Length: 214
Image 1 (cartoon, helix red, strand yellow):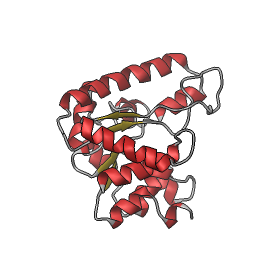
Image 2: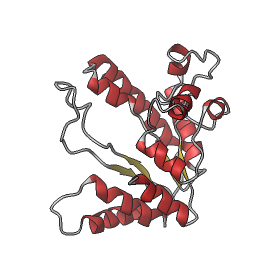
Image 3: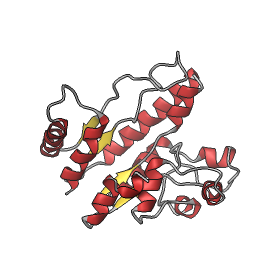
Image 4: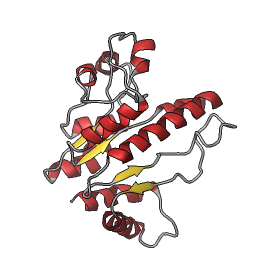
């Protein structure tokens, strides 16, 4: 009910802006929601509530989406879609750059790191970070948009402390990449959102995004 009242995505939609969740979802994801077996994630639900398309198997095959593991190997090995085109991490970064230019706000959720954290799986955690590093490097090598920003952050701590299966209360990073002018404007609005508080929190990010895009 809280999400239905309005989100960053619906505010952008109300301003005539577009938003996209770049993750591709398999058929069983939509089927499990339809029968009430599971609830959609908050970002997927927000995108859907604003009337934007959630990407599916067809989008992934057409090159218009990215799998949660970047490469789509999991779609072959775990989901059984053996004909799924597989990308290298470098190619995934190139696709991210291409798809990001098609919406005013493009979001990608790398939730596999959360799974590795809950399982306290150090080899998997290291592998996932290595893949992310390569994807990000590829994305940056292709990034030539002086009017765009790349932002990396997390909704909570987890992977940085594998001594616990739970989410942590550690501060999360916010990495902002782009031209000095755009970065400066974003940080300025981030500070405005903070107002009189002693430090930033995650609630500051959405207003800063809204100001930057608006």
